[in-house]
Length: 275
Ligand code: AMP
Image (cartoon, rainbow, N blue to C red; front, side, top):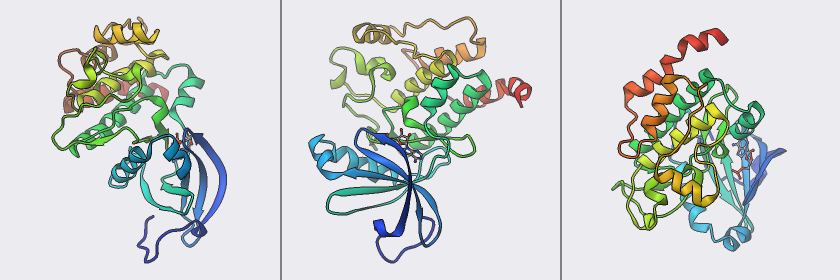
């Protein structure tokens, strides 16, 4: 919360509003902190369900990591408290909900819009990686949209703080996983934050085309990821095609400052047509 408190937060400090959504392990409500009128999203997790789902460590990690992050494109976690049965997370309210739903409704995004989102994702990932945090589960379901249409990365349940930059746990969602994680025995290998860059390429494709590039049966998806085998439809512009290929490269996966700039500026003409 944007003020210093001398006593710990509790449920009594909030007025609870409409439900915003339901996740695998909890419900999220619109809420207002009574003394300041501050609007936020309150996520309620039941301790028994976390124990049953064996995700206590994951949730603890999510709280530890997210509460230390401050970036306009990363969902803020302002605080947390708990009672006997529940854990409450006080989150930044993302007024336009899930990006996934916007994508479903639109089918696919025009390039100017995809470019804006990818530029914001890139800024957020650069920030996370600089802090040696890998998100490891980048996909439209884990991205929320703020009141001004800006995107907010959320769901840090799979993220990890790895100061030595190398990890070896299998995680995330198959469609967005990079080759180094899906190859047989891949889960025993080391990988680094380049896994998020790969997912960014998958996301870019999905924004522009309306479905993920390697979508298939699980076995075929795995095979196609290992070969970086994707068909980019002809309506995708040469600039976007080039960037997707660069980011989903099997050998190098680089997103330099120049790329980020090029990507967000190469569409500026298009953007001007729409605005
Ligand atoms: P989660 O348990 O984090 O997957 O959240 C379940 C659903 O609640 C999401 O899919 C969103 O629709 C909604 N939601 C979660 N967090 C927020 C938030 N900070 N602002 C607005 N809606 C949210």
